[in-house]
Image (cartoon, rainbow, N blue to C red; front, side, top):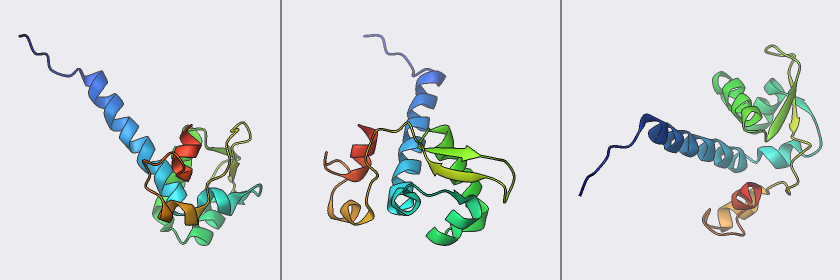
Length: 115
């Protein structure tokens, strides 16, 4: 039986899939979507509200923008405004439910966002 090694594309696809999942679950764990609601905040405001280390806020929010969970207006350290992506037709996850449910459960808020 001939075995083949995984291609670099397959390896990267798996790695990025894990990365995307971790970013989304981190957003749910920090209650980002409930905090945003229908409001708009700068990255610095989000960082303060969620008690995030300032060094990682921009990368974290940029990842969620790239994944289309957030929208960004403006540019720069204090000039950008973030809001929940308007074209998402999913309910916003709630923090307390995450701690009561297994992320593999279909009723878990993180799973509801992904459906």
